[in-house]
Image (cartoon, rainbow, N blue to C red; front, side):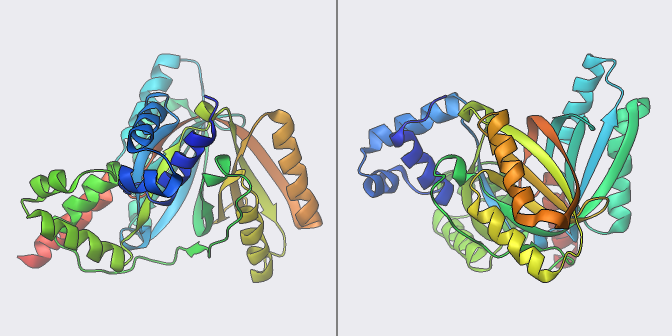
Length: 336
């Protein structure tokens, strides 16, 4: 779908705050409420907007994040589709994608401890059975960027500090809070009326609880997810091995990825490679230009790299269902 300036205004507003009322979006952008509602509905129908999500702070719900890549024997397409469905529906997976290249599937897992990670990984690999040919696991240590605004406003440059993963942080939440988080995780535009019905609380109390979750950084905002293909972009997954990865080089990567609008994700990992990127490119030539620019900026520090095409994203949430359920269960036991 070709996006015009009005589409881009609506999308940029939703990237900044996807819970913002339509009337506020219309006033801020000099549009009528009816136009904003029509454009947003069309963008959803055309699958440009794939989801309205809440940026839930992962550090309150897991000890770490791991990425699992799997190469499969692709002899049975029907069985492969069943595997994809199982991965997408797994309650500990927060992101998954089908790849074309050296691996066929990639997924990220939020885990509570090393035993939990081993259990989840074992479950996922068991669902693939004898089709598994190779697999590798990398642990996230620092996330530099997860932002697709550049696909709508490529000239807008911003920066943000990285998020580190060094163990689970504690916060006291009760069952009602978890119900609100669960509902908002899957649709951040869920109405106060609907949330009040789910929690059996008054609308004013729901508003107060959401405000408290925001104030305590359990909720870090509300945004949208874009389908890159629907916006005429190709997605690429890259892994880099960077030698002498000092704090200064880490800071340089952070600045670089935020000032390149087509890098939609970047994190540091412990594994065979220490930098993972996803890039949205307009075509193969555009991707090559971005890749060459990365190599130019970091030169001999990049001792090895590989890339693959992301055929389709299968799942994207900030905190998967299981962790919200586990935490709610813990709170119920604690409060007895």
